[in-house]
Length: 196
Image 1 (cartoon, rainbow, N blue to C red):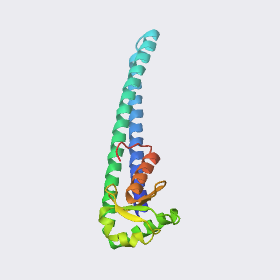
Image 2 (cartoon, rainbow, N blue to C red):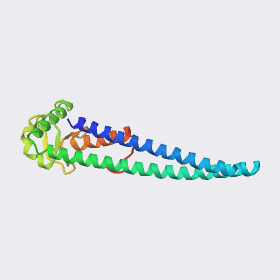
Image 3 (cartoon, rainbow, N blue to C red):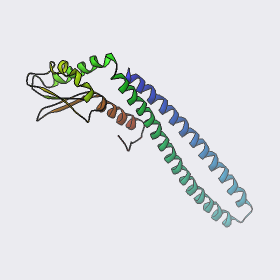
Image 4 (spheres, rainbow, N blue to C red):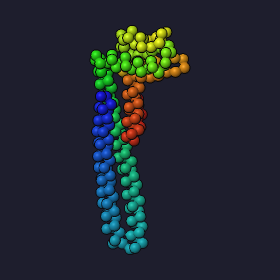
């Protein structure tokens, strides 16, 4: 359900970015045509040598201006994409936090813990959960091997479960899943994110 919503958000952002890119391309092409037409009209009235020099100078100037405008447009588009992505993932984070307050969350948490316990194949582990999830620790500990312990982890802000031994660690938290989705989104949209 969350993946479907993320997919819809990704599709909407991608469509918006494509439309903006197309608009910038059209405006850039129109600007090039306008500037070239002006330069060619002025050059026709001068000698062949002057025409050549003037055309080259204008093309170089237009090229620099267009390069500058394209760079500015890319920066603007990148910044807007990043703003949109931040808004989307902030909304998603809020929805995940709201989910952790529902009755369905306990079932999710126990399924998540079961998945992790299977990865450790009967080894005693330290199970890490969000402070608010400590009330489920008795149910969680039953899913792991004898000798396992449950601890609250201040680094888990959204929910889910981590488990570790001295050698192996596994993370099945909502925090890491949201982070992975944001990274995936950034890679697949051609964006890189500066924040987490």
